[in-house]
Structures are given as structure tokens and as C-alpha cells.
Length: 118
Figure (spheres, one colour):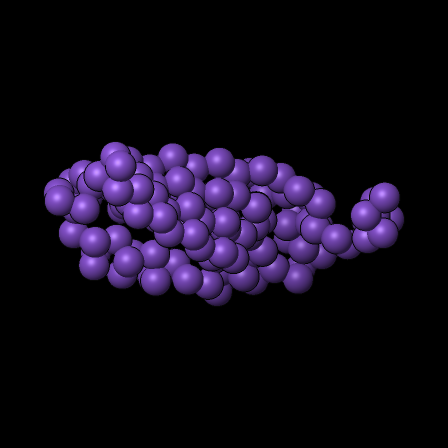
């Protein structure tokens, strides 16, 4: 369901339903990916991550040789739909385990913004 700002844009006539300009809420999130390099097409994983590059704030990759796996952690700012698309595509690949977490956070706009960090 659209948030209050989307409803306000719709009611004020600012949203263009025909051309799909209803603002989409972006949430801060993380994606944890554990893959078996023996079974996983690593190039495909990297290509999928690249396709969602506009949604990715940070990426950390770690080869965990003791366990024979690679771990990739992503920090994202994305809509729920885009996050679901990414994790769904990754989860269908052989040898890939993926989990995600999304949170609503303040956007840094408005009176509740505490940019002093206190």
C-alpha cells in the first residue's frame, strides 16, 4: 500500500498514473549471499548483482576457504519489489543461499531529522 506521501501526490494530482510516476518507497536493507563456488555460476551471480547496481550502496565479498564457500553481503536502498526480484533470481541459482532484511528508516527530511547524531 502506498505511503502517505504517495497518497498526497495522488490526491493533489501530482502523480501520473498513466505513466507510472507514483513514488516508490525505498528502504534500507541488507542481502546476505552464501554460495558454493563449485556449484554456482559465479559470473551469473555477479551479472545479477550488476543489474541491480543502482540499488546497491555497498558490497563486501569474502572467500571463506575453510568452509569452501564465498560470502557476499550487500547494503541496499531499494523498493521491496526490486529487493524481491534480486533475491528471487539469486535464490533460483544452484548452490546459492540468500536472505534479506529491510527496514523503514527516517529519510533525513523533516522535523524528526537528527542530523547531529546525538
